[in-house]
Every structure is written in C-alpha cells, then in structure tokens.
Length: 382
Image (cartoon, rainbow, N blue to C red):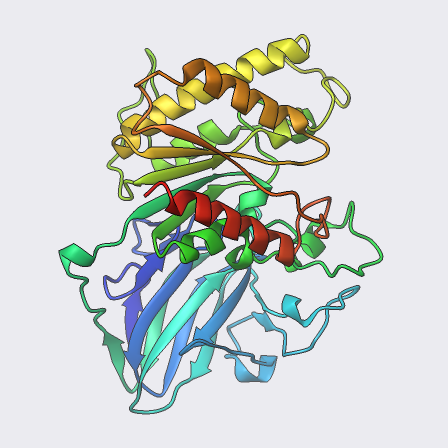
C-alpha cells in the first residue's frame, strides 16, 4: 500500500487545520473536513481521534463498519445504521468514535476513481483530531484539479461559541432529559456539519472556516469559568499578533477572509456575576464596559489580520442572555461612522427558534432556520 502523509498536497481540507512538524494534519476547529480523490481497492486512514465523533463518506455515501471491518490496530468503534447509544433514540447519532490512535480501513471499488471525505462532527475535548497519514491499496492518490483564478471562491470565517459549534443539535425533540447531560452524551449528539455556521457557509458557496468553542465569551466565559476567552484562543491558535506594547509578531494568515461573522456575548451575560465564583468585574456595568472595549479591540485586530474584511455581528435571541443583543446594537450605534473596522460592520439578529438541543440550544431544525436567515443576510451584502 502506498503511504501519504496527512499534509500531502493532494489532500484537501475545509475548515480550521494545520500541519505539524511531522507532516500530520490537525483538525483545529468544528466541522473541519478532509477530501481526496484516489484509485485503489482499499484505503486506510491513520488517525488520532480521542473521543472525537466523525463520519466517513465514499462518493457522498456515509460508510458504516462493524469492528470486524476494521484492522486490529484500529481501536475505532463504528456504529451501524440505526444503532443507538444509551439513552439515544436517533440514528442520526451513529458515527465513528475515535480513541487515542487507530487505523480504519475501508474497501474501495477496484480500478474506479472515488472521492473520500472525512468530516469531524463533534468538538474535540482539548486534543484535536489528527490525520497522520493515508494508505491506498493497489492504487494511489489522485491530484485535485486546480481551480482557475477567476473561479476562486470568496472566503468567510465564523468566530463564536456553542451556537456556531452546533452544540447538542442532534438531541431528539422527545428526549426525556436535555439539561446537564454528561459531556460524552453531548458530544455524541453534536454534528457541527449541520450547525448553522457550516450550513450558512455551504449555502453561500464560499470557502469557510469555523473558529468556535462552546462556553467561551469575549471577556467572561459561561458561569465565570476561568481560562482563555475567545479573542485569546483565536490569537493563539491562528498565530494572529495582538495590538499593544507586548504585541507578538503575527504569523502568515493562510485564510484571509472576505467576510468575518462573529457570534459572541451570550456566555458573557447568561449567568449572574459572582454566582459561582469571585470574578474581576465589580458589577454588571463594569462587565458591559469591558465587553465593549474587548469587542472593539478584537475587531481592530481582525481587521488588520484579514486585510479589511466585512464584519457581520450576530445577535442571538436567547432567553437567558438578552444583554448581548442590546449591547451589540448600542455599541454599533456609537461607532457607526468609525472607518477603522474593515469594509464595514453589519448587524444580523438570528430568528427565535425552538431550543430542542442539549442545554437550551437549537436542534437541527433551528440551526437550519438560522443558517438560511444568516446566509440570506450575508448574500445581500456581497
């Protein structure tokens, strides 16, 4: 079998990704996808995918394998159509679930060119999924046809929280419990490929990336939990230099976006200050002021990083966080004439949708509705 490193130029990636020093490809954000064309009688994917749910497709058809269909080294558990995890009533949740390291082998129709796609569905729990390499039996990878310059697609980046992740969107409407579920259950009921950000990017026929982490805010994470907030996470994972005296030298931006859609703020304001722990904000007014300053700084950094993009700030009509929408609109009214933010800033408020997903999040229908609304708004700006 011919072996190809995960970073091989013949392997296409959509979404946040990087190549490490060993030539392995890292999936660095929700809904990342790998695509390739090949000819052979089988394909083996060498993966590190600890707890990450993912789908494999051959010519657009989802593949289902029992453990008997995998190599002894794989250690990857595949669910067959209609199989259910404990407490699950939806075949939508059946997927491959990885452990630390494995090899999954799929048979291919011999002598026929096929398209193979690997799609990450869930968030990685701190450790990204890694494609170490691919083996093709009795065949080879085929080059992906280059797109003529005049056909290069516009680019959009989605930066946000669990709404852009697609958190818990597979939970059935009739599920007896939907709040406080174990992390593994939420992961098995999350499909970022059918979250509003990925659906919106596909509807716009744009190249897209999603930089989103559940529970993160601009200056305050959900329930005041410590750790990095989204601007710091973005700057570090993307290599973006920040403004200020201690600014780091920025890396090269390998995905300069034409449009940046930002959905942040729900986590900053959805829980009361000091309810769970001591926090650095004296009161709600201090939190709001810090939030507005952070938004302005983040937009300024993103404007430099992407080369004057168009910004779309997304308001979320969540019953627990009305302050996010109010502050966005208030802040926009104050900076409406400021020319320092890319090619302009626009506000789009998502429609109110049923919260049938895990922990008061939209289900599949709600994500589809929000994606259509957001895509229609962005389309009229182009």
